[in-house]
Length: 426
Image (cartoon, rainbow, N blue to C red):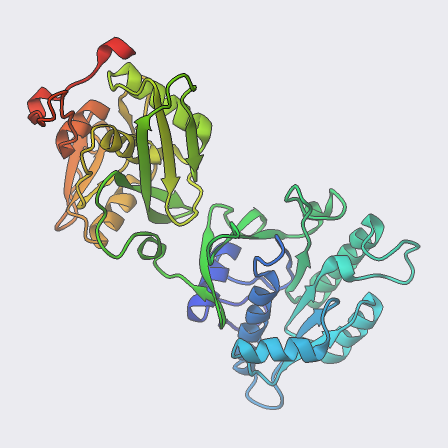
């Protein structure tokens, strides 16, 4: 991390930049940050790396004498275990102090002696105050310990990060007002199947909650992903029933591959819809709209998957989902050089999305030669070099533009102007 004085710490290195992006641009002095996530998501690993970055920065803030310390407190591991993990992560700062303790009063004494530049407490559920008549990990202990750490952060003007365990429902364990006590609530998200991690915030007094950080869990710890689109797109261009959607994560455009499979349902068995990475209700609406404009989806099982385990929530991915389904239905591949942006209305029309210019520029930067956008939103803007912006009014226009068409019953593919819609199955 990089910075000076008591104003905060700016990003240093890719990992530091990703963390600071989520925090609002910097680590704010005097802030109390709660970091939650499911077991194994990488909370402790990320914060130990952050402690190392803060320690490296602190070394450059003092020209004489020893540099300010950074204190990492663990109520779950011994110092030897922490040191071994720090060595594996390549952290070698001699001003990073590791302290295994559960008694918060002892921790406060250590903070008073060291006068650290930053403190990490892992985890708040393992801390206790002797004066609180309650068991370790109880609601009362968690609340009181958090209140004490908040006052310590404000009085000393240092950032304190606390790890919070989560319940089976995904909520932070402890009192309901825990999130109201802290300044920032961060989440380390993992689907349990892939190595990538998403760092996000649900509360941030110092910045937007729309920003996200992208990391890959590797042997040397959390590795920042500077361009997530390259991580989620295949190395070779897509063929078959898959389309590229352009979604926004905060202010960052992200290109994702959406795959679809549309097959005849088993006779006498109700058709099924399976959605992985997209909202099932949204998928149901899209298929109803597609049938409304004439695509024959009756008696079909429809499966949609977002590659990489990402969750797509914004409607800007509607067009890519619909194109992938139509591609599978008509057994006609989606052009590998095209990306799709647009929300689909109930009449099959394309509707505008936010930050369209930024999405289109990202498509061009990644080498796609065509970008399909809503005609109502792209008016007079200059297209990026090497990328043709194709304006379409509705889903029918899009399918015509990319050459997705019915083969007919004879197996001979019809021309674009003869694209077939089965309007008797609306």
